[in-house]
Length: 622
Image (cartoon, rainbow, N blue to C red; front, side, top):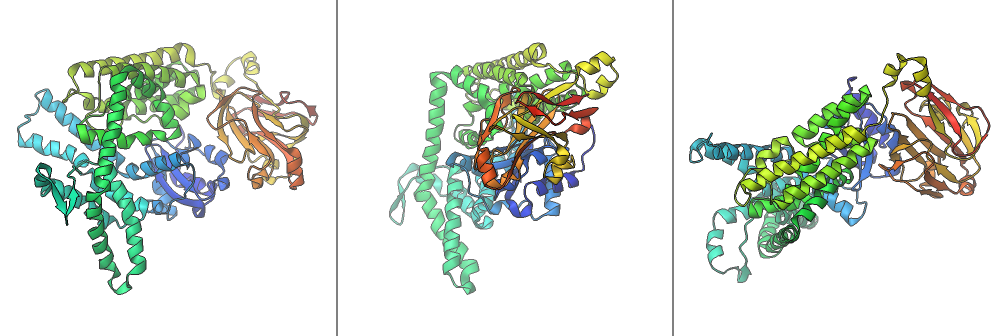
């Protein structure tokens, strides 16, 4: 597999999202760069998706997400070296998208910076607990106490970590936020003991004593309000006393306000959410587990799985376990199992080269984005079979009452967090392992038998008999009815020079645009003027409707497909008002190019002639 120059890749990505000036914030998770762009129309999604080292590009949760895989921290670091983006890029947020999208973006930005620390410490605690349970470590020894404290500290002092990241998100003073979190936890360690046993007050106002150790929601809300309070005082106070008076007044106001009002309210709200989930699990745990297991990887695709993180952490803090997690191990490992089947079954060396490491990452670390975007989703059936296995395994685990007792990404390494502990019984653990095993077997077997239909790569095919070379030719259909024109005749220097690949232009006579090949829509511009499709056998086609029509900002265009959707050749991609394009002064010529032309022996365009959509206009020889 060719090496990737991450400094070059970082520069290319930044350039194609509209430059540093177009980036409102930048963060990264386990596999994705997450941009919030000031103007999404300035981003060239197709160009980013074609860069070496990029698995795919998608827009979800109000973010422009570039999926890199396990090496995303390297790209993120390089972007930080060539720009001012990086750790401080999240201080200014672009407000866009609906309420739910903004909520998901909020949660991800707050939890992402310390996710791996949280997962690593939780795994340490799980391993220490397992060692004590199996008699390898004396639970009364100082060694156990030190190791257990090391693993337990991240959850116990979670409000402090949240104070730091929430302050960055809400543009509050981080150090004041940490003191605010510390004050809430200090009450738990000292004065709260007396308050819990008898009614108390603050200047005559009743105080309800609740625990803030390991809490999630109270400190996030407190820091959010803190940001407004600080900005108010900074605007009103004289500069000679502002630096020390603003923190003084903020703490004087925020600590009592939190303890008296939204601290107890949000704590009880968190308990209410946990009660609701436990009620669903009690009523029909198998159904809840099947739905969660079946759709968990769909949630990952759209980035909405972050909405469950506060609920899981809140459950772990309040009761020491989270029933939601009992349904999550199966769907993660099922997708990895499907990718493993692709690795063994596929005839494509390139696909096997990606499927092997992706499956390993999914099994060992619970990172499924490379599996989903690079392997299973392009083939469609492996992803579906993984979801089926996840639904069955999730139902079994949930019905048995399985749950994590520490936070970790579901993976083979996280299995110790499912070991018997408190209400999580030995029977629950055994059935979790059975359910997960069943999920992996179902996904692997179904994918191996029915999920992979591909051919050898072009290099391998080149050494095959001539008859097979002829059979490997791919015909690309015209996306629209009209007159074929050579690329060199198109009034666009990039297309005319073949910089984006070989193909043809078509002067359309109708406004219906159809898919030229079967495959997955890997890029669908929000303006509706361009679509990228990748076929199962590796052909990457770009359909660009009109020249410079991105400037119309979608006016006159109506998309019929979305990114990630699988289409057949001849499916409707979009409809366009040709007269509106012409009236606005733009050329309606529709271009179809094969963006990975260099990977094939030849890409032969049709000669100038009149065509109907569906007629062959490009022939690809492998």
